[in-house]
Image (cartoon, rainbow, N blue to C red; front, side):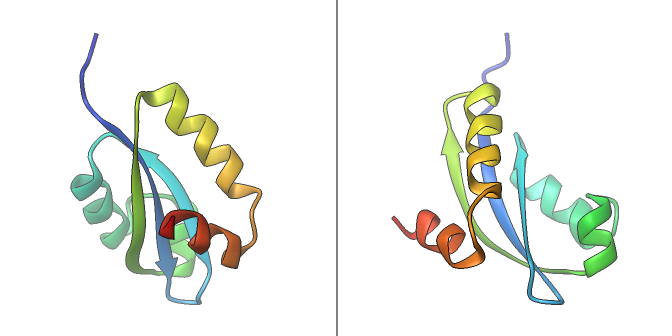
Length: 83
């Protein structure tokens, strides 16, 4: 069993869209996105910056939260992470 922390995060792409993802190593994942090796979406839209992130208890919680956040509008996503 691993004790790595899982996080959900928001990335702003160069076209202004927001990408939502999950990782257990945020700094490594941001480096991957910046180098174009993270996700197809971010590679296509261009990596802008990390907007926000939240820690989760485990991978299952992170994935469920990611699904929930992906259903929100851009404004709702940003407000969710501000809370």
